[in-house]
Length: 215
Image 1: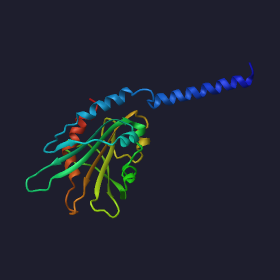
Image 2 (image 1 turned 90 degrees about the horizontal axis):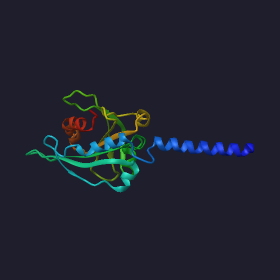
Image 3 (image 1 turned 30 degrees about the vertical axis):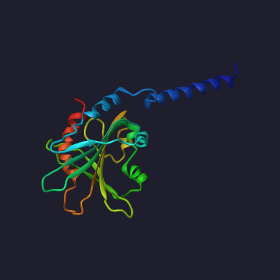
Image 4 (image 1 turned 135 degrees about the horizontal axis):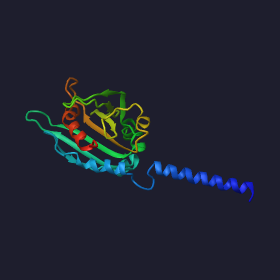
């Protein structure tokens, strides 16, 4: 048996082993138990939260393909108070492989639709009755030559608290499964008025923790 043949066999074995290890790490051939558990919890988020009601909306196939989500909710929450304009907030909740969900941020997603992020995102910590220290990114988006700016809040969660991670890929590198949440709302022309997403956070976060956090 020649040395060249031996090295060829060893080289092929290393390539096959590397492919096998990569496939196992990325769930190429099956969905891991961790991903299945997170996906099963997504639909349990209530359609009615306090005095907010909602309707479920479809999510485009191309969007699901990009983020490789195992499960999702695309939902519009509305609160109607007599004498006031209805408040509307769009929620997108995704679960899936951490490596996929940690790399897509709104500046890329909304940028593909022609929207521009106005400045750098800033951190936002919602006020909740349970005193949790969840944090979210928030940023304003606008489309040139069009009115109707909106604000986007987003964060990731591995089953604990929600986190506005500076580098989500590194932060959750040790996790195989992840949640990602977007809240999107139109901005009022009155800068002193609290936007509806911040109002929804107070009622929604306890439900998110109850439904999505592992016991």
